[in-house]
Length: 91
Image (cartoon, rainbow, N blue to C red; front, side):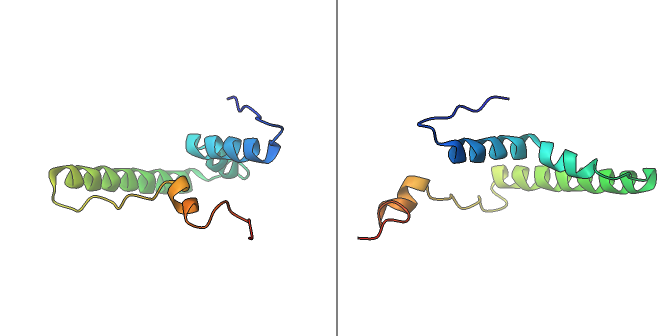
């Protein structure tokens, strides 16, 4: 995994790295492996994960077929910032 640091902005690169790790599921995996998980607890967790995945798939399918409304679009970061200028600037 690679993250480029632009203009010596390490904080922004760190945020990008955290986003990539979150998207890949590595943070969740590390947290899960910190302590021993009993086989029965593992089965319960995996069953719950499978149920959540199936519900998500069914929800997306229903949205595609028009049975459920599509999720609302989030405004782009530029559009959110555009009204009041850059974050933290006070005139």
